Length: 173
Image 1 (cartoon, rainbow, N blue to C red):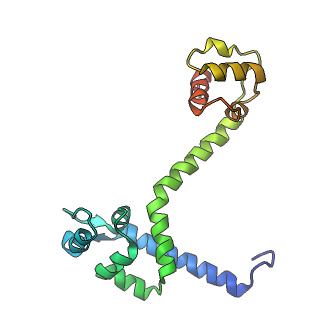
Image 2: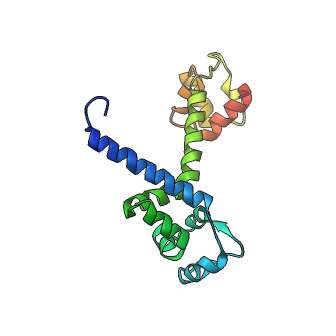
Image 3: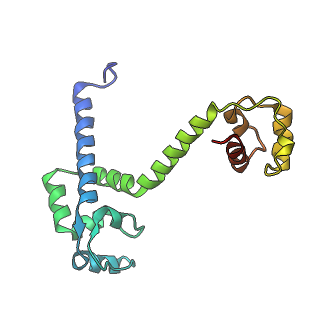
């Protein structure tokens, strides 16, 4: 937008779409449904009934349940969608974000961890054969290549993530 690649109209459309997306996500994370409201639909989809109130977002984590089915069953959700002018595309995006949020956060944390190991130095004269917890192949390759950092070691073919974990424990990280 700031570089002139998108018009004001297009930029504003994207901003409004993102706002509607965030509003529906906030709604499903904050609103609970009662068992008698959704149990008939859950049974028809072949999934277990609710025994107590549950957030709409937690229902979306079930593979058999999607936001379109819920929007036909849950009156408060149906009303919110109508009042907020939320279309099926935004509903689908919201469902994807809710369903995969845990996985995405886990992957982000793993990526952050990988960035931190990138700069951890390794001693150039380190005796890798003294670490019996490393696989034999890893000991051979690390001794031959002599990586300067843990990040470099992690990219050597034959050095597994468990070998990197052993090195991290040894260096005290």
